[in-house]
Amino acid sequence: MITEKTPIGEIMKRAYENGILIPAFNVAYLPMIKPIVDTLKRMHTFALVEVARPDVERFGAKSFQSVAEEYHKLADRNFSRLHLDHVPVIDEEGKRVDWKSLIKMGLDLEYDSVMIDGSRLPLEENIAVTREVVELAHRFGRPVEAELGAVFGHESGPLPPYEELFRSGKGFTDPQEAERFVKETKVDWLSIAIGNVHGAISGVAKDKKKVSARLNIKHLKRISQKVGIPLVLHGGSGIKREYVLEAIKNGISKMNIGTSIRQAYERSLSEKPDDIERAQENVALEVERLIKEYEVEGSWERL
Ligand SMILES: [Zn+2]
Image (cartoon, rainbow, N blue to C red):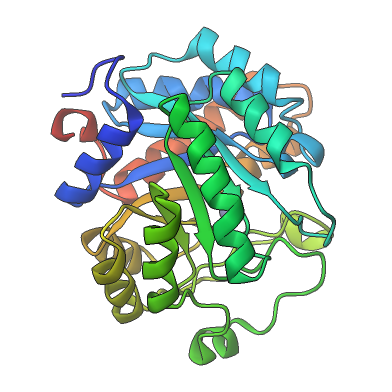
């Protein structure tokens, strides 16, 4: 059973070996932290609480420091850890990012794990950057997530037609490359593209319902056999349930969920502005629904 002291690397390994999902909830607004951690505790479910640059810069997560402070104030760490999501080397607008200071900041602020996203780089450079982050984070005893392949959706332009994307396998993670990537970087967890897409974070699309994504499970199996480490699915909101359950059996141990809980919060506030408590209740309801949907209620006892 998990205690406050169990390292997240160890917990994720158990999840991988036992086919249990660790959901990772993105905090788009600071008041979302409370309903997330309270619901996890009430439902004996283990999950990650995470935050990424768009949550801070485009929505209301304020800063990485405020998220860390609020999390450490409110969370019962039997049921969660704090993860720094998506530190990009090149961001969604094509700009270079000072990833090294962001990673260092995350480690200093006691994020339990970090993600470096070099997926917009050529393979060699993605390997070099990821390896550097792994060396740094491992000195602090923190695991690293990296990304290989293209999880579309965060870019500001329109998403290519989904069915076309899925059929062509455009941007899917290549199993051979994944094998080499993991061997050379010693990364702990790998985010892959197998049909999943990110929720939109800009324009009118950010308020719309996401496409109902599918997953290529055969492709997932090929990657999983090659790498043998916990795999991560970004863009969890809107993926059909049967695909997610099948993916968990085949190596997906962490799934990021942002859009659906952010929209639950925003929708509530647009109906009743200033009623933060009601918005928090709506986030709690959505987290509860997701926990049931992905069969992770009581996962704390099984991990
Ligand atoms: Zn992502």
